[in-house]
Length: 103
Image (cartoon, rainbow, N blue to C red; front, side, top):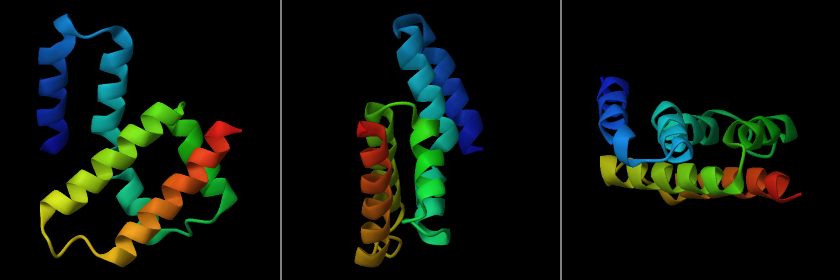
């Protein structure tokens, strides 16, 4: 359902957004749960995982947008969803992948 709503929103914005902006939005809609899932279910220090995430993001800007969206989504879902432990894992995942993107 969220993906369908996201796609409708994306299509409504197409006339006013550039191709790159639309591509970024579509990617964020598709991947909005990725960092949350990876940070809580995988080893956030695994070099292969970090490489896959950085490659998927294609740029530090997109990785940063996904990180901020994930943070807002987790925090906005329910106060019980966000914990300092989850926040630390999410931050470790972001920092590890962003270092690869910088290099």
